[in-house]
Image (cartoon, rainbow, N blue to C red):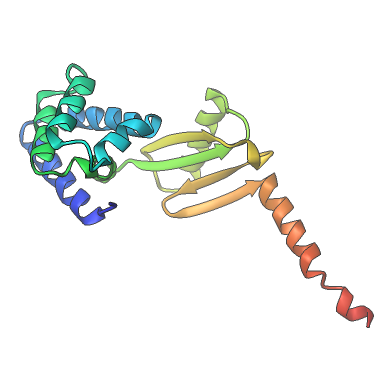
Length: 187
């Protein structure tokens, strides 16, 4: 049920309302909280998307999970989504809000994936390197760990991907062996 146009419109409406009420930062904190819940708890997202569970029940579940954790404006917004039957799109709306907030504040997301967790020192060094080699100044670094990389890193920034992992090197070597450019020269 991915609907980026709908998510963008709801996120824009919420940003406009939060701007009018001078609550943009508080609402963004709420949206990031919701984003963490959606990423870490697939059951919560499954409940939102379930056609079997009635919207009233979904509203009560959402309210019980978020009752004291989010602001009144965010709570009212989520109630509106449930009333309109758009709770299915909540994860996409949350992601769209965070993206629009980052554009509004000129914050650029950089994601680095490594084989092992990286230290805070290394994270700061990466941010400093990105700042010095690009014109970006407000950087939000997201880290992830994937064992299958074996070593090295994968850096994603503004639609660009830098894959400097051992896994990628091994795939390249495997491809060279599969192509085996030298066999046809022997005949």
